[in-house]
Amino acid sequence: MHPWVFEGVIEKIEGQLNDGDLVRVIKAEDRSFIAYGFFNSKSQIRVRLVSWTEEDSISEAWAVGRVLSALQWRMSTLGLKTNDSFRVFSSEADGLSGLTIDKFGPYLSVIVSARAILPWLESIVKMLQDSVLKPTAIRIRSDSVRAKQDGFELEDRWIGVEPQDHFVIEQGGTRYAVDLRKGQKTGFYLDQRLNRPAVAQYSRGKDVLDLFCYSGGFALEARRAGAVSTLGIDSSADALLLAKKNQELNALDQMEWQEGDAFEHLKGASKNYGMIVLDPPRFAPGRKDFEAALRKYFSLNEAAVKRIESDGILVTHSCSSAVTLADLMEVIAGVSRRSRRAAQVLEVRGAAPDHPVLLSCPETAYLKEVIVRWA
Ligand code: SAH
Image (cartoon, rainbow, N blue to C red; front, top):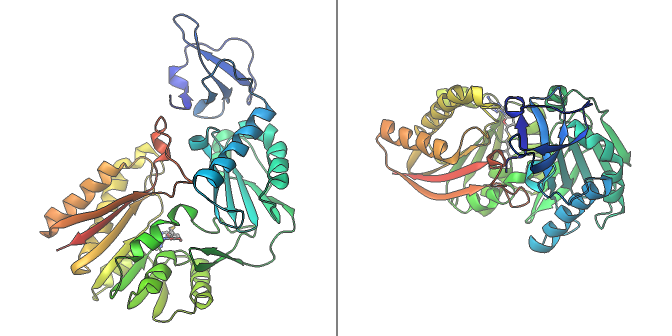
C-alpha cells in the first residue's frame, strides 16, 4: 500500500494530535487496522505510513533497525563494501519516508525531508557512527524545499572531521572528486553509477556530447571506454570545475567542458555526434507540471536527435516521478515520427539497485534511462 495519506481521504481525526505524533490509521467502516504512520497538519502528506503490521511497536529502536537492515542487505545482496560509495537508505523505498542516507567514500550524508524523522535522528546517526562503515564524518541537513512543506527546520551540520576541500572516490576504476562542503547541494549522483559504464560501452569510436554533465560522469566513462572525444555542457561553473578535476584525476585527454544552457547549445550547434547523453534535472517536480514537462522533454530530445549521426546513439533520461517510462517512450516515439528516423531501443535502465523501486510507491521509480539507436 502507498505510504502517503493525503488530507482528502481522511474522514475523521480522533483525539488531539500534534505534528509528528504516531497515529493508528483505521478503516472508517469497521475500524479495522490499516497501518501506523506519522501525522503532520502542515504537510500535504497528512500521514506518512511506516508499518502495515499491527504487532509492530514503532519506536526509536525500530527505526534504527530499519536503517541497519537497509545497510546490511546492500552489503550482502549487492556486495557493496565499506569503502564503496552508494545510497545506504532510500526513504520510502526502504520503508521510512523522509530519510535519505548517501555514502561517499568515508563520508556519510544524511538528508531529512520529513519532520517525523527528527526524534530518531540522533540514534540513527549514532548507529551509523558505530556501524561497520566507520565514517570519518557525517553531514546532517534537511532537504530545504521539503522541510518547508513539512514545516520544520534543521541546521546543516557535520559530526566528526568534515572535509576541508573536495575528496576523491572511486567507482569501477574511475576516480571522481566529490565536494560535500556546506552549500554544495549534491556531491555526486550515485543513482547513475552503473548507467555510466553501461552507456560507455556504446561510445567506442564516437564523438560524445554529454549534456547536463554535472561532474562529467558519462563523458569520463565514455572516454575511458574508447570514445574519440567528449564535450560536456552544464550551466553550473562549480560542476565543471569538478569535471575538469575528474579529467585530470583519470589522466584523460580529448575532453572539453563548456558552461552554458543545454537547450541553447543544441539550438546553436552545427556539429553532429555519434552519441548524445541527456540527463536534465527534474522537469516535473509535481503532477501539475506534467504537461509542461512532457513538452520540454519532447523539444530537448527532438533537438538532440537533429544532432545525432546516422547509426548514432541517444541516451535519454527523466528523473521526474510524474513522468513514467511509458511517457518517456512516447516522447521518443514522437521524435522518431517527426524526424522520420527509425528509433531502436537498445536498453532500458533505471537507478542502481541501492535506489530500489518500491512497487507500492511508484514515485520511487523516478529515474528512467533509455538507450536508443537512430537510423
Ligand atoms: N549527468 C550528471 C548528473 C546531471 S544532474 C552525472 O552523471 O553526474 C543535472 C545537471 O543539469 C546539474 O549539474 C545542473 O547544473 C544542470 N543543469 C540544469 N539546467 C541546465 C541547463 N538548462 N543547461 C545545462 N545544464 C543544466
